[in-house]
Amino acid sequence: MSVTEAIAPGAIAKKPLVANPDLFTSKPSLIGLTRPQMAKALHEKGVPEKQLRMRVNQLWHWLYIRGVSDFDAMTNVAKDMREMLKEHFTIARPEIVEEQISNDGTRKWLLRFPSRGAGRPVEIETVYIPEEGRGTLCISSQVGCTLTCSFCHTGTQKLVRNLTAEEILSQLLLARDRLGDFPGADTPPGAFVPTGDRKVTNIVMMGMGEPLYNFDSVKTALLIATDGDGLSLSKRRVTLSTSGVVPEIYRTGEEIGVMLAISLHAVRDELRDMLVPINKKYPLKELLDACRAYPSLSNARRITFEYVMLKDVNDSLEDAKLMVQLLKGIPAKINLIPFNPWPGTNYQCSDWATIEKFADFINQAGYASPIRTPRGRDILAACGQLKSESERMRKTERLAFEAMMIAGHGEDDD
Ligand code: SAH
Ligand code: SF4
Image (tube, rainbow, N blue to C red):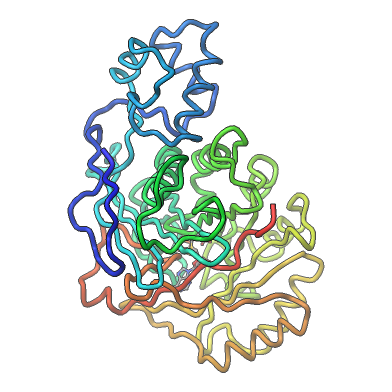
């Protein structure tokens, strides 16, 4: 059951807005399956071989073009077929535990998924950042993270579990539900959304977790999100951010083909070993070789390098110079991210003047280097350090967070 009332900016909806009746049942979902997987699931429940293709196409249309979350809405599917589907499968959305809307239009949803063996239900956050010409959805891939980047709050949380392809894709479906972004749906009154046809125009895999440590589910979800007969986002508008899992960067290029963002954060191995410890396994040279080999790079298809500005750690002009040398030959844009402090961290954000000097140097070397401007401050919507319910901060601690935005990822033109 989905509720469509609008929530005033700044308001927090505490009670579940979308209660998922199947949350505690074991019915498998039809969302997030590849076409062959869906055909197999249907066949196992008695759908004849010769109907499979047609049924899969039918379901695909209802799930991903029309965005339905109720089998009864599938009006061209016979009633007995719908009953069979209802008995064996679910297409319900996850439960929304909390929806927050910032004064600047940024939206954040706290979503609850079943435990799937992880002990108890898990919670993750998805953030929507609207701008004039685009609406970017920041999606999570894991609950927690196995990696321990020293400046990242998610890195202090243990991995609770990987999200399934369904759960990754559901973040997009749910955001589109709430924004009235499916055919025939109304946008909530007063919502800040981009002016074009679509409300969600871009996706960034920059929520919780390391997407390349959950490769198969991320791949399946992103291939459905970019499938021309379904959600049909352009691959140029989908950006996957990784801390640098080199073998899976090659696979991402070959098997997914979306835009790539690299959490660089340091340009010397000794420092990167400390900030982004996966560097010990895949040092800078290997990482940049993988970037150079990324398919179809050009000035119009560049790799984004994310660089968090840490006071007196990685913010010297010497670092900026090294960065320019290191990235030579790679079509790149550099995103300087003001460090977002969290309780217990020893790092500080670089001074604004230092960040500007750093950015100027890089600009002069010919790189676009936008500095992310903070968004959604009032609802603490910080991509890159979203937390899970399993390690919730006290309210006073949460106030220490600053929000930032994720603009500058993905391309505008198709
Ligand atoms: N695990 C993936 C994607 C999620 S993090 C990755 O590491 O790329 C998204 C971005 O936010 C990454 O570049 C990450 O390094 C950055 N980030 C994490 N914590 C941050 C913080 N406290 N302040 C600023 N950026 C942060
Ligand atoms: Fe994990 Fe990315 Fe945070 Fe590193 S920066 S701990 S990879 S979420």
